[in-house]
Length: 246
Ligand SMILES: [Fe+2]
Ligand SMILES: [Fe+2]
Image 1 (cartoon, rainbow, N blue to C red):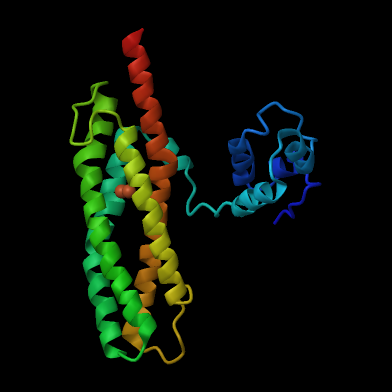
Image 2: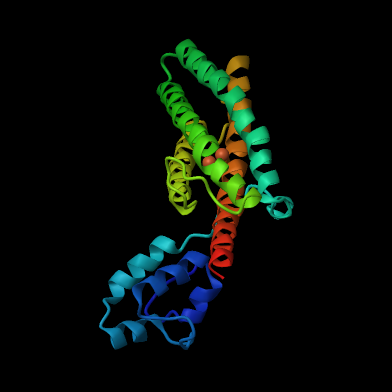
């Protein structure tokens, strides 16, 4: 991780985690095209910006981007229709099968080891995430995905309960994805990254194996939506709009 001081140059931030430059640009004291050889201390001095606050803001962004859970190339090559179909048929279908089973399994393992607080907590997290995801999948299937299919097939959108611009429901779905990823992080913590303790009997081990698959599938699913489907849908709609204006 990059060590940040007043003597750190902007060019060093450019070579670091991408969040660093986003954080610096958001302050307005450095703009694209400015001299990157300037030091942070100099920038603060010139603009009367508190260097301690700048370093604090940058530290929050000084984390490497997470390794992508899958290669996005095959999904970039699909049409939007194919990609929506793939997400529904592979990931939504998997979740609908796996979630009731995992909710029951985590509850049964927690009940069988009532002295283990982490298992009780895990079962609560699993029940919570399943409930949230049920609503999330419906929201995508009933509002957002029909809008995306409309853009691709008819070039215009029949307004749904979320209006007619894909950006609205997409922002809402991205927020929910962030909450889901946080819950997965808690579940990893509670299970030491889905590692079975020596004393764990078969159902406990089976639960951990299935949870690890759930975690992986959900991360891939969210990655495909956030990084491929959503940006391409926004672009497709703005392309349709500018074509309509021309
Ligand atoms: Fe989805
Ligand atoms: Fe989603």
